[in-house]
Image (cartoon, rainbow, N blue to C red; front, side, top):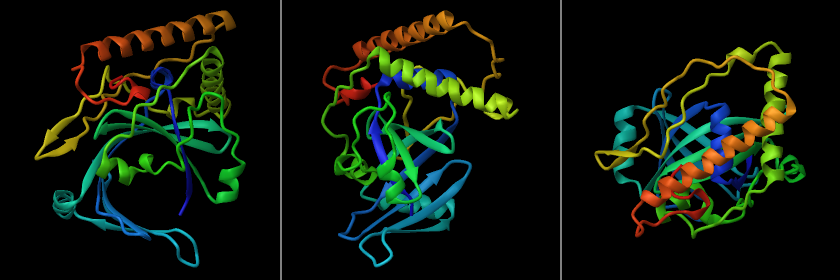
Amino acid sequence: MKTERRFLIAPSLVRLILKERLILKNVIEGYFAPTANRIHFVRVEPGAGSNIVLQSFGGPDGPVEERTKISPVQAEALLDVCAGQIAYRRTHVRIGPGLDAFLDRFEHPGALDLLAVEFDDPTTAEAFEVPGWFGPEVTADPQYHRGALAVQGLPEHVLIEVDNASVIALVDTLEGHAGQRQANGDASHEPRAAAPAHHDLRAENGRPVIPFAQASPQRPAVARAPDARIDEVLAGLSEALESSGAVAAEEDPGEVRHTGTRGRH
C-alpha cells in the first residue's frame, strides 16, 4: 500500500493547472463505518469499473490494501447502504522527474481541492521537498481523509494565500514538464479537455453524478518570450480570481462552503 501526503491548493492555482492540461478520472466512493484498524469502501469509476476496497492497519506488515472487482449492480447496491459518499474528479499532474501528483476536485459533499502525492514507502515520502506552490499540508489531519469527508462532510473554512512566488513556481513546474515531454517526443500524447466554468454536480437516485469533460482539440506548442509568458500567467491568474469571485457572489449566502476553494471554480 502506497504512502500518501495530501495538501490544500489555492483555487486560482487550480484554474491555471486546468488551463494547461486536464486529464480526468471521475470517481464516486461510498464509505462504510470504519473500525479501529480497518476502512472499507466501494469505488466506482465510470468507464473503468467498480471495486470494493479494504484497507487494514496495524498488522505486522504495515498497512495493506485489498481490492475486489464487483459488478455495476453490486456497486449500486453497496452505495445505497454505505454511511456516506464522495464524488471527485482526479487530474494527473507531473511535478518532477518520475514524480506525480493528483489534483482531486471534490464535487460532493461540497467543493474542495486537494493535492495527493503517492510514494512507495514512508522514507521517500518524508524526504519529499514540498514545492512552493503547494498549500498547507493536511496529511495528519483526519478531517481531510476521504472517508471522513464522506461521512462527516467538509472541514472548517481555510483561506489559502497566493503570492507571485507561488504562481511562478507553478508555471515553472508546468512548463518544465511540457519541455521534458517535447524533448522525449511525446508531447502530442497528453489529452486535453475544456475545464468546466464551475462545479456541476447532479443527483441520480440520491447519488452524485460527475459529468465527463468534453475533449477539445490540442493546442499547438507556441514559443513565447519570457515577458510574454509572465503576461500570460498574470492574465490567467486575474481571470481565475475574477471568475472565482463572480461565481461566489452568485451563490446562496447561507450555503456552507470551503473558503479555500471559494465554493465553486
